[in-house]
Length: 193
Image (cartoon, rainbow, N blue to C red; front, side, top):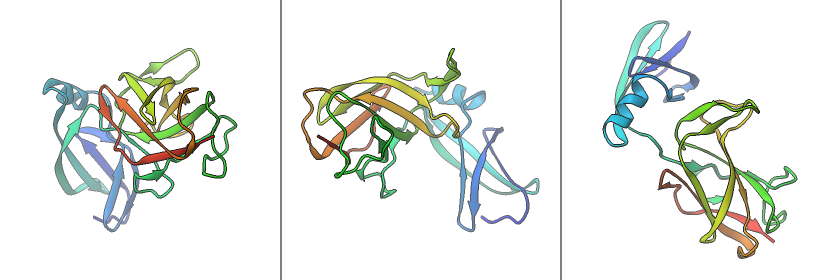
């Protein structure tokens, strides 16, 4: 799909923010309100979403896709969902084999698909409404924040985790995060010292 002019999209009739378009791709944010969430929750967690693309107000394509209340995934440096996590150590430096996080420290993972955001809290941040848990190398980790990433679209979520004191060390320790029991795909790793 390509459009010279103004691109727009709707999901089940609700306007959806368009992040970018190219000759073969349109990237949108699925809105979390109104009939979309009602449809998703009505049918035990999933329902088809009808997505329509417009160029200068004229529909140029549509597709029906499955919609789930959560389908979490973590971002990775390779951009393919496996390998080194795209994450920050407690000192806000990028985690890498040469810059490992310390046990007991707090680290920030970034992902998408963790579900709906609630209303803003006293700090102005919107937290996920789903129950979010994490494990590092199979050891349960404390999730201290799960919500929007300040200054970004609602589709980019930040998960702040305290690395357990008894977590294994090494350059490729697995991280798995769940949202309402749905786990991120296996294969995302990070370095712990």
